[in-house]
Amino acid sequence: MSEIRSSILVISSCGKLKAVSHPNQPTCSNLSNHQQRETAKKNFQNLSLEAGNLYTGEQAKFVRKSIEVLRLISSVEHLILSAGFGLVDEKELLPPYDCSFTNKTKKDIQVMARNLSIPDEVKRIAEEKYELVYLALGKNYLTAVEDVNVFSASSRLVVHFNTQLETDAKNILSINQKLFVGRKHNHQIFKAPIGGYIRAKGSLLLNYALDLKEENKNLKNLTFQEWWDHKKSIL
Image 1 (cartoon, one colour):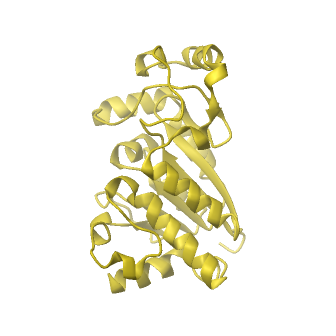
Image 2 (spheres, helix red, strand yellow):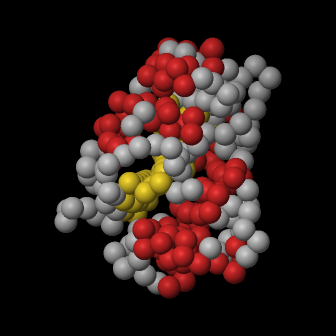
């Protein structure tokens, strides 16, 4: 683990709310293979935005703010798990589209994910070494990842939010959102409002970032695990 650089990987999910839309924007059925996806990018080139700025939902906003603050302290990579285009970098241009893993069966999600090469891309990225891998993903999007354990071999800590996932890896932290969502005294514990479940993953990361910035500590001095253990003890 000594070779791990002080860096963070954040993988967040796409969202229904987007900065641009079009009456004829592609849906899941129009994005089922590589050629269709490339055609959609070409046809809606004038409406395309960087993936990191495309989504306008609450979680996306909090994730963006978190990354902005964290980049004052450490290097951060941000990838978005898109049900329409796969695992994409924040700088990749994406057109408006309407496709999600929400309300899909586990089998359907797995088929879609493999068509998008998501599990293979995850395995490739997991070979990199990170101080923190933060998976701001709901249950269905974690299903698309297929196996969060792939990150444990190279990275110091992996954080996700599905407490039903089983793992033997000691460096995988599963956070139960019920511990901090809706608590009346959260304003005494967290600098930024936690809000409801929709933005919880993003707002938790933002609070970690704000505490790091305020205390002027780097990741080696205050790891996410240490920070969360302290917060959990006073919730």
